[in-house]
Length: 95
Image (spheres, helix red, strand yellow):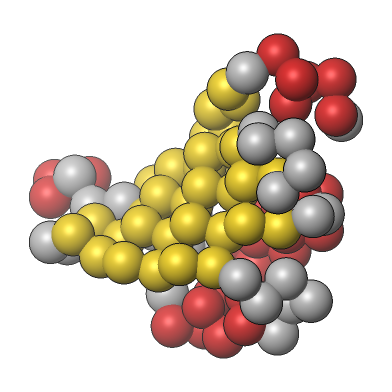
């Protein structure tokens, strides 16, 4: 997870908030370019297999928000895979 945070810090979008709750990690990113952040996370996950122990229900949750449209993507990483949950119709149109 520390490697992912380092990658996020290197993005042009410097404004992000990171906090943790128990075993579960939570990252909130506010950016003008949702696609760049999403692609970076996807590539990182492919190479590093961000994962959690299903027995402990451990996971990393990443929320990506667009400053302009107020839309967001929530990604849950478990066992080296990711699931996209899209919220708000405007986000679907943005892609």
